[in-house]
Each structure stands twice: as C-alpha cells, then as structure tokens.
Image 1: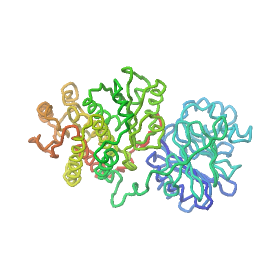
Image 2: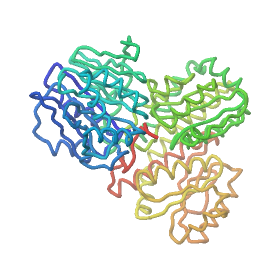
Image 3: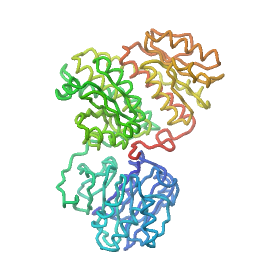
Image 4: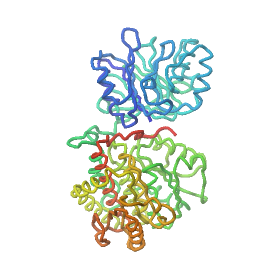
Length: 592
C-alpha cells in the first residue's frame, strides 16, 4: 500500500516534481517517506519517519537534480522508523530502490545474501530486493538481466523503481501484481503507483502489465517481457487535478461528503440518458442468465455489498456476500452459472484481485463496480461499472460507498425496466442536501460523544447493513471503539456491553421492523444507554432524534449514512485528529 514515484527530466526540476508526486500518493501510506537521486556520480538518499512535510522540513535546502525516485510508506515488513523508510541503498552502493508490495520469501533470500557477505541496515523485505538485484548485477554487469534473474526467485507482489549509479540516465522498473504506470510529458518521463502522482505534468500514461520490466529515459519508455520488447500504447489521463483541491475545506473528507449529491447526479447523467437506461445488453443478459449473484469486497465495499445483496432480492436472484480476504482462501461456488460482483473503490485491492483471478480460472463471469476504470481489477473483469465519483483522497470512504449503491440501484432499475427508481434517487438527493444544510445539528451531537470510549449502532435489515458502515467510519477516524449490532441479536450477548451513559445510535427506515427495533431501544435505555435515533419523518420517536425526509426503503440508506459520515468527521475533527489520514490505515490496500 506504499506509493512509489520516479522522475527523469530534461530540466533540473525533479525535486519539486517528486515532492508533488509523493504528496499526491500519501493516501497510500504516510508512516515514512524519502527519495534518492544521483548527483556528481553519487546516490544521495534523504528519508525520515512521518509525512512528506516532515521530510522537507528536515531537508529544507535541497539541490535540484534531473533523475530521482521517491516513496511514501505504509509499514508492512519492519516498523515505521527512519531505518526502514525507503529508498534502500544496496550494500555495495550500486543500487537505490523503492518498493510497493510484499516479498513472501525474503527471509530465505536474506539468509542466502548474508552468507555471501551482505549486511543489512533495515528490517524490510525491500532492502533484500535491492541487494538481490545488486548481487546479480555485480556478476553480470547488466541490470535488465539482474531484474529477470531476481524475478525468478522473488515470491510475492511488487513494483520497484531503481537507480543504478553506473547508469545515471535511466530509471529501471519491474512490476508484478502491484500497480505501476509510466507518465509521458514533453519535459521527461515519470513512474508512479498511480497516475494521480503526476497528473499535473502528464496527460498521457502507459500501463505496465504484470511481469513486465524495463526502464525510462528522459525521452522514451522501454518495456520488456521475458520474450523481448513489448509494444505499448498510451492513454489520456482521466483524473482531473481540480477534483483533488481542498478549496475552503479543512479536510478532504468533509469536501467529499458534500460532493455526494453531485456525484449521484453524475451517475444519473451517465446511466440514464434521454429517459432510457444506459447499460449494455450483454450485462443485462448476463444477469438474466445467472442463477446466483455472489458479491465480494472488503471493508466499506463489503458493507455496501450487503445492501446490494438485499436490493437483488427484487429480481428474485439468490445472492451470497463474502469478505474477499476470506473467500480467496476458502472459495465456494453456488449454481451452475453464477455472476460474481466485485466492489473496490481503487480497483487495486489485493484481496479482491486474488478472488477475481480464481473466478477467471473457473470461467465464471464477473462484474466490477469501481472508481478507477484503468485499474488492475478493471482489466480483469468482464463488465465494469465506473462510479465517476472523482478522486477520494480521504482514507475513510464516503462518496464511493454511496455511489456504489446508487449505480447498482440503477442497474436493478434497468434490469426491471423500472424508471420509478430515478425519481426515488432524486428524492434521496434532496434529502441528502437537507442533511448537509443541517450539519450543525450533527456537530452538536458529535460534541456529546467525542470523549466516549465505546459507541454502538443498532438497526435491522437495511438499517443494520448501514449501521456496519456507520460503525466502521467512526472507529476508522476517531479511534473510538464502535460496534454495529443487529437489533434482534442484542439480547443474544451484546447487551452485556451496555452500561450507563454509553451512546447508542439507532437507524429507523423500515415500518416492518419499527416496533421490534423500538423494543431494542427500550432495552438499552433501561440499562442506562444514551439513545440517539436517526429516523424517517413518519417514524418519529420520543427519544433524542435526527429526523430525515421520508424515502422509499430501497433508497433510504443513501441519505441516512450521510448523518453517520458527518458524525464521524465532527468527532475526529473535535479530537484534533488528522481526519484524512487516520493512523495505521491507507486508502489503497495493495497487500494481503
């Protein structure tokens, strides 16, 4: 989940370009950061624990250079500290390397290299890779051959960018299962984990496929497979820098919350044109022919898929939901012709990639719902539904969650040839705008719980699924212990955790479960809980409540979850935390 960058420029301006790229990639990790460059026939490395800003405060007066690599880290192998920060310099100082991914057999390789005289300064698997490449390079004097030989030994997933002191006009790379793209501009070439890193400088990018390696110069990119050089095609950058600017907002998360109505409207524009749904007949036919629809995702995507599964009940298709990291080790199949629906905001989620590879081997069809059309998962899926949400910079997902549900609602509408869902979604947009206008009310509620150590969310049906996401958001960015509980399960164990003063948030959307959930509310109140109800206008209660415009059940979660997003945001903000960059987390989970 780290971010890597590389720049080789026709000008002495790489310092500012690497800084820009690293800042853009901090969503991938911000435990430590560093960069390496070649100047006066020497590899120079500057790195430290912390963020990009920490690095440039530590090294304020830097010379400019025209070739360099950089890295921002989410710690995996080796704790977050200065010695484990990237780049890593090989033992004989020939190679500087930055790495995204995990090497499963690094201990075995490290033992081999130690026996051959190598000593190590860090605890990382990445330093092992640098030394392995150098080990072969000192034998054959050929980096390309050394990359090939190393790749035959390394087990795991990785994208690496490499400086070689003997070739100060090239940046080498190798990619296996971790994202890496090449950026092309008139001023030079770039390498990055994400095109976002250099969208300011490049309009054209080249995807690097798995098990490809090569190098870039200031003029050209050279990509190879084991069979020889590969023809590559560039594509235009789809991501706009203006989507990523904070403007008047203090954090990206609140900006992204308040973009939700416009992002839903964008989906209506894309998927419903001239009073007709805009989905391919092949996709609709695939759904028709499927005998099971199986949803797979992680984290927020898993919470969204639970709602998608309930929506699928409308078309009388049996469904199953799975956590990707579990299913990949214990895959199960139902029906003769299942359709697998994968959800991933980034399209680079390693756990989900493992699952789609298994599905492809079995020959089953797959649909991906994602915010990244150019991602690894998008290249593997049979069908792709983009979210068109613009970049999500905050680690805690908000607008992607809502648009995942929205695009699937539209797909169900298209399958049933039911235009009524369009008006219902428009009603939900109005309700969300009303919540945004009343966010100060949620702020006052947040003040009441910011010092609490435990918070609970209750719901039934759709409301329970939504409670899972509400709970996840709160724990992600406030570090308050939070749990979502299905109302009927409360008395089967969790009620033991209820004590005087503990906040319990209850979602009321469904008239069918209203009285049953009200009984659960009374159960926790009688044990001293402080109850906050988030209710439809027609389901008002006598407790402290936040009332939301009545909506049809199948779109009700689009609005109510916005309350939960604001609640988590305001609590985190009031606690003085970094809302966008919560500890121990990263936006794109590219490791298992």
